Length: 177
Image (cartoon, rainbow, N blue to C red; front, side, top):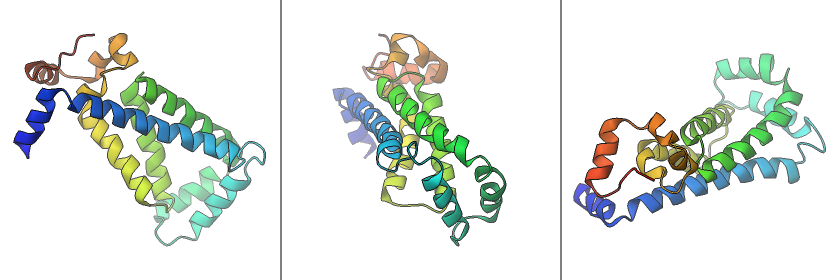
């Protein structure tokens, strides 16, 4: 298995696949924000969907007690603010990840938002795919920077250590522009 992975990396197939995963991950977050605005009517009927969602989360047995306290004392108090912030942030993060600009911080923010979604009692196949994709992108971050604005503006150096760059260069994937 490890030998096959090395062969794939040497052929130059692996970095484009990681870039494709980054772009698809970004599209997923972009669509999540757009869907909230246009299909779930978060801006036309502010607070209705989110308030109902949060109240229904309080009745779910798989929501941890500490998160129920958070929902009751924080989220429901600021439901209108969250109603506007969540979809806008999802759209911005999706666009940043697609372009490959400040990618690692964007993915970490997506993970934070996703953890909150899971804690509110929602877990499904798409949740698992997004969660796994986020960690995969972080693990293979040196390959994720191909075709990115992070690489163009030299921001990839902020989140990549010297050993990763040497390893990437040694297998034929230069980290230069």
